[in-house]
Image (spheres, rainbow, N blue to C red):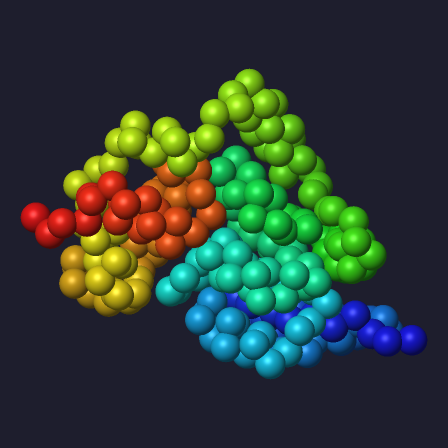
Length: 221
């Protein structure tokens, strides 16, 4: 029997090592690779197409949502399982909207974690506990409006810092470059980027850039 091939994407080495030990101890699955950033993951996954990718949602550089969006375009058969500390509604809903097969929290048990891998490998979805509640509430609200979020983008209210970050991303800077330029932490830049995605109701910063270009909103101050 072929083993379930699992690829790990998380910026904490100790955490990845723990997951590797757990997964490789199971008779029906094995870790086929790992990466500490979204950029490294996309590079590695261009040569490896695992059955399941375990993805952290917040990492240095491009975040888990953006990484997964790009990954699924290149490898639609791969299943994404988000394994996160955060059960915030926008994170959970964005994960489902971009095509993730599951979303569980890092404080879950080993049994639930392994069951989630097997479940999504079999083509099903796996969202548990607080995450399921978040999804229900999010999509109940979404069904009340059939409007296209892109059409509503003109009504998005961005802070001065968010506008600045969008311009810097458009100019080719990554999170580290932006953080150093603005004298902020990488985590702060990641938080701003997630907030931008939430406001535009999209899954990648590229979609924001595309809209801003078409609306001629990227002129330097």
